[in-house]
Structures are given as structure tokens and as C-alpha cells.
Amino acid sequence: MLAVLTEIRPVTRRDTLYTFECPDIARTARPGQFVEVRLTDGCEPFLRRPISIFDADGARTFSLLVRTAGRGTAAMTGWSAGTEVDVLGPLGNGFSWGPEDRDCVLAAGGIGLAPLAFLAKRLLDEGKQVRLLFSPERDAELLQALPFRERIGIVFSENRGALPAVLTSILRHGVDAVFSCGPEGFLETVAAYAAEYHTPCQLSVERRMACGIGICLGCAIAVRTEQGVTYRKVCGDGPVFRAEEVVFGEEP
Image 1 (cartoon, one colour):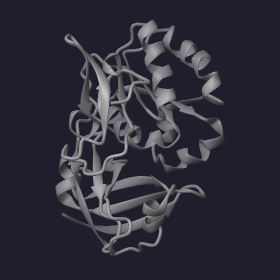
Image 2: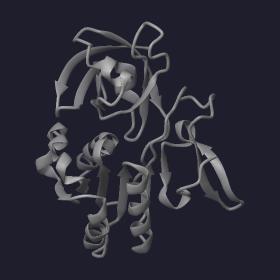
Image 3: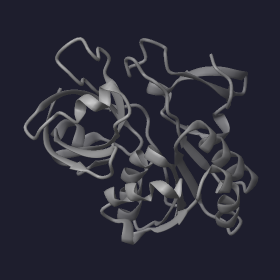
């Protein structure tokens, strides 16, 4: 479907917030889902790019927080308001929560903030207590993208090495749920400490996705089941998984 770019807002030197008008996506998107974006009308780059949904207003618009990291995302910086973009979505399975999840911790590793922002908004709308653990602290400028940052408690981890101590200080007092997105090593640490403190935890896993709809099988990850370790597709079965399902360090 076509989405019309309505606003481009630089957030940091390498991160940009793109807002689109597309009621079909805005009305149905859930936190943790993503879209597949066609970047150019030509052959370079050929493949769409999977990008987490940063926000959706439930009516007309949705937004993407994008880090410029390669040719594909660099092509997006050349867009202007009014550009029509071919987008597939919303795709994948998002985060889930219930009435019992009153005290929620969101752990973001860098641009892993993107899907957690949408989640934080929904949790706040439901009257939940929301705390954001953000790492690394040197990327704190990225938090300027959050319009509701004064409504959440923000805790910084200076780097991944400091993460265990920060997680311990939060989880030892008891929380209802942890939700996380970030690099694999970051997620592995969050999952380990959530397990140690018997805290339900969901992870939004990052993988390269060529198609985003389960055809190419390029985004498989190892997961634990009652029958042993098997493989699931991040695009269709995820990108959100229960932390205890994910097997780290094993490639298909």
C-alpha cells in the first residue's frame, strides 16, 4: 500500500523520525510490529527494509524512527514531504501485556528504542508505571524523539558492561514485566537477569529480513520448545518472543 510522507524530523546526527499518513497501518498497528519499506523505484537497493513502528495514532498516521546506517536508510534521507512510499504492514507479532502488568520496565539498547516507544505510549495510556532503561548513555540524545519522556522514569546504563549492575538495582525490588529491544548481546543480558529475578520478559529480536512475510527463510532464529531446540522465523513468529524461548549464540 502507499503511505504519504508528511514530516521528516532529524533527532540526532544519524537518526531521523519519519511520519506517514496511511490509515490502514495507523488503525491496526500494535507495539512491536514492523513494516517493510520499499526505498527506491530503481534496482538499488532492490530489497525492502524492515523497520519497527515507532508510533501510530490509531486513525491516520504512523511514524518510523530510523538510524542511517547503509545505502538503504541513506536513500530515505533524500525523501521530502509528499513522497509516496510503498509499504507492507503492519507485520509480525508484537508485545503482549495484561491487567496484572502494572509496573513495567522497558530496556532499550540504542535504536532498539524504536518499538519500545510505541509500547510505552500504550502502557501509559492504560495507567501503567513505565520505566525506561536506556543504554548506552552516550546515545541519550535519541530520547528527544519521545514526546512523553517526562512521564516515564529513565535510568541509564553507561555501557553494556554496566548493564548487569543497573538491571540488578531495578529487578531486585520486583517488577511485573520486562520488555526489551536492542543488539543480541544486550538482549542476552536482559534475558539472563530477568530469569534470575523470575520476571516475565519479552524480547524484540533484530534480524535481517529480505521479504518480511516468511518466504525467504533468511531471518530464522533458534528457540527452545518442549521437543528441544528448533527454528522460528522472526518476521512471522516474532519479532517478539518470550525471553526463555530464545537460544542465543546458535545460528541456523
